[in-house]
Image (cartoon, rainbow, N blue to C red; front, side):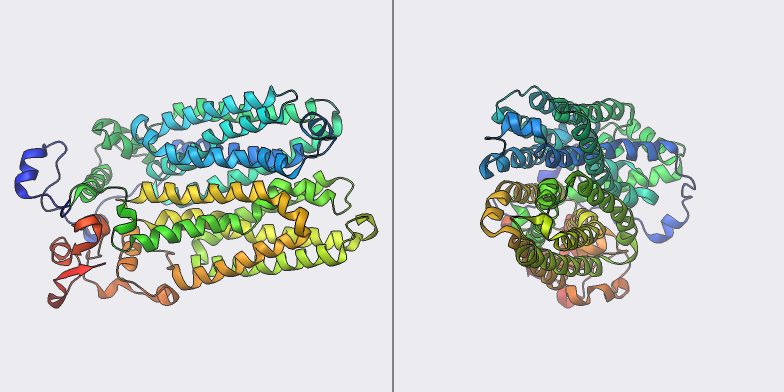
Length: 562
């Protein structure tokens, strides 16, 4: 295929003034230029409302995930879909796990839909498609496979929402509140889980027929209808509109979301940055999907993102969310729904605190501290459950049951303040714009894959090794501590361009928090998006990078193999 680099002749023949990329990508605007532009002083209400409405997508996911734990313990649900009043390991694992298979496929298919239909329409369509899954679930009478397939169909919608909602928020919301708004997606997930626990508690106590599970199940559609209809009242992503050539719409939407005039200097500068990014993404010609593995330092970053997303599942948090009611009924509690509500409340409150940690503690410290904290909690939970809890008569060992509940709450608090919200933020910072959509889809798919594996096999594993299953997750937490320590760069307070430069320069992750970019010439960060790549993306011309503002000494102006 040769170098991914257009010749001057090819550029003249193929590119048009409306879509072409200049041979020399314009340098980024300098700080002095940015200083003379008056920044918006107030955040308009429409920006806050947009962030809140889009985050309902997280609520939908959380509610669907949280309700299944209660269903598995409801008498009518057991009578209809169980075997002699109970579930086999395979049947229970399939009912719980098919949601994750659907979400994985929905995640992978969402990117082309979002780029074709737009962010808003994809979110709305995904929400209404989710309702199809709810209808399949709620109309199930005696066939458990129908209910399981309903969860699979619902998962397709949820998976698309999990990719497109954060994308829509980050592209639309003003910079001042962008971080908090995108992180609120995780907060809404925890609120959805908590709400499902509360509704399950109420219906399980009041009803003995199908209303036990059909009422909370039917409410799922209400949240989706709310999201699917109200999101259409919001403006389209300005960046998506601009990419589609709808420049005036992009200006108008951006102005509305920032509370300024469409032709103000601020909007002019924002539009210029979007155009420069489009030009940068086009530099060097076409970039096939496999460059996420062969591009400069991309294999390292792609695998790191996949490990972190898979690691979020391997902490074991969803084991407690999916099977919480079942787990704590085995400890001798008379009403295990109350324990689930307690866990859900801890999850919500801790996630609110986690939003502060995201911006104030630092990614590496928080992630390593959270992994160590969860490791300790899981080991205590496992050994107490295995050695002290009388599994034949748990009522005779109430102290052991109470200890397990306490350390489960401490575990949930650790997860909700660190690995819960932080992984989404870190993975979003890992990749250059050129590869971001593909890499994020792949990383998120790894999250859903391990979500399925855990939800499907957990019952079978616990039947063999009971509470020692917690040691598996504890070991994973220990391994994740060292993954973060040796491989993850500290990105707190850094621009996306700085982060890209740090990975390109092989900055040592252990000392990355103290890395200083001031030694580099101004506006000269090495930027993956601006590189001309060699065959299969395995090499880059540093001389060309320097021509576009890269940081190079004369002796370094040579071909660099990566």
